[in-house]
Amino acid sequence: MKEVRIEDWLLNIEVEKTAAIYEDFTEVCAGQYYENFCKASLLLDDEVLHFGDVLGLDLHKPSAMNAFPVEGEQVMYSGHYTICGEIIAGELEAWDIVIGAHCFSLIEEDDHKPKLVTEPHFLIGFEVVLPWQLPESMELIKK
Image (cartoon, rainbow, N blue to C red; front, side):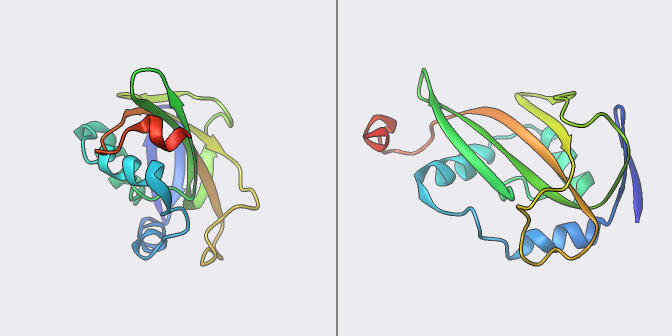
């Protein structure tokens, strides 16, 4: 276990086990909104990428994700990532970590987890608005 402090969060994380979850994880990898999420995520700034690396996350592969079109050819994504470990300190369900356009929150375990997770774990929720990057018009997908 590795103790990680991010602002007011204090987490005890199994970084290698968390990273292993995402190596072959494909549960949400379907559809054009997800494809756009991956493409737009290639443009993430270094601070957000560092956040993911510290936690052992592949930010392209959330455990669960929703997509909602918003004005201006953008998509609001929300969902969560599964982390092997435990929360030592940090307020739950508070969108208290903001990095660039991303908002993150701690979430206690729920029933939606990758099938391979047998370790103690928790979730980190996210919300972000990303630009539409695919050549197909977002208007055609909405219909």
